[in-house]
Image (cartoon, rainbow, N blue to C red; front, side):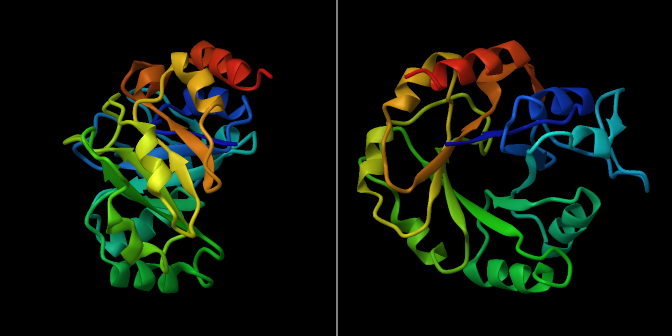
Length: 228
């Protein structure tokens, strides 16, 4: 199972999380988010923090790929962040059209970022009885889906939906389980089974402050997750 830790903006915190063997590090580029990454790296490359930053190369000691999270951003804005932050994955949380996504991929791959992945978030309300069919129009233009809790904050709300609705998903693309997963949910994650589920997305419930993750909580969660 792949593990993504999202909503990060502190260079040292990213280094610590990456050293845990996390697969994906999520950077949010949306000005309405308290986890918004607002600064552009210098030529040497830095990940900014409110008063603290470290070289980008130091943050990458580990296997973690960088995921840029966008909400209705312009293609140029996305491309700029892909280049400046050396993103491996684009995660879209807005009302992006399939045409826009296809054009974005054609611009980036192969000339700018070969083999870049594009994920589309599909919001699910707590009262949903099945997966919204909105995903179907994106199946031929994205690499994976992120099934997240629907909220005004577009992710990072700490709220959960019933994972039982995912039983209705019979699409061809893999997905990440997201939405309010907390330290106490390791056993629940272990007991969740779907042939297309490739990983989970952790965010606000592992924080000491917006954008700052509790390393010990993540360690404990990973240990519990790996228990037989």
